[in-house]
Amino acid sequence: MPHTPKTLTKKPHTPQIGIHIGRINRLRIARLSPHGAYLKVDSSNTQALQKVDSSPLPHALYEVLLPKKFCPAQAQIGDMVQVFVYTDSLDRPVATTQVPLAQCGEVAFLRVVSYAGNGVFLDLGLDKDIFMPSKTPANYALDSSVAVYITLDKSRRLIAKKDIQSHLLPYRARGYVRGKKVSILPFSVSDLGVSVVVDPCYYGLVYLPQSVRDKQKSLESTLAAMGLGLGTKGVAFIHNVRSDGKLDLVLHKRQHADESAAKLLQALRDNGGKLAVHYDSSPESIFALLGMSKKALKRALSDLLAQKLITLTPQVGIELVESNASR
Image (cartoon, rainbow, N blue to C red; front, side):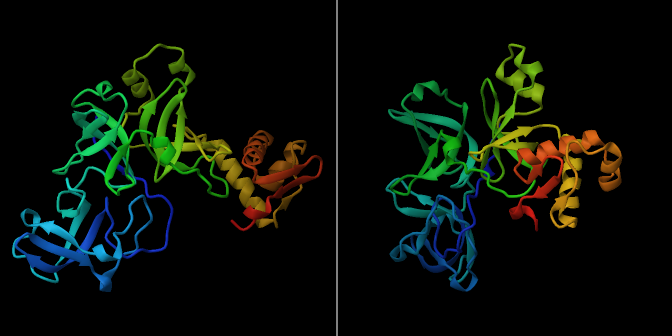
């Protein structure tokens, strides 16, 4: 399976100044030694970082060693370098110019390279492999790929976690989102459908079509029938946002229904949030007011009511929910 890590940056956070373990940092060479170059944050050119599972080093450690074998030729004090920071075999922060297959806060498919009594080691593209805890390490074949979430343990060492879903955030966007196009990364398959990461950090489920459910198919055949692949980025459309923030997705947009709902929303906004139209309005009055058929209006009303974007008073009309009036 391809190694296709996708960033899962959690939520926007106040910019932080520091060296972030598990992330690529842009640092300045502060001093040189026989062991390599010592790097510090360039306070004159700090970058706004988004909060993920990584955290800055303590103030006393706002300096990290880039071993000599990774130092650029002709490196000089004051030069800027881009490095990945992690911990070495002695749990000391260290920098490398090697590019990891995934960073802290990302999902990736990584290859099993060796076993331990309480887990397996996965290839992260660095000199040091990343550990994935497991009570049944023998279940993972050498050279097989495993979908994992990259994070830090309590000692701030990089660690791979198999429970991807628990690290994903609930989707809380306001406004009409049904039919919205999203980028997805499939990571597992169940009887219900394909679990995916919705870029950048949400959980979604693409339900199996009935035609696929009715047939006993292998994992590969199921994915192929849906035009998806584990670890391969794809596209889907939001069908529903559940109360817990999880997303129900479809692979093909219901174009006409989505356009009718969007058109009705805009008409509400253009008319102060209220319209004298409802399920029992005549086809002629609906077309005169909105330029759509009664069937299209009914679909749009059902969609918007399900999304809790409007309220409806029978025989009177519809009203935009206040929080969406200006959106």
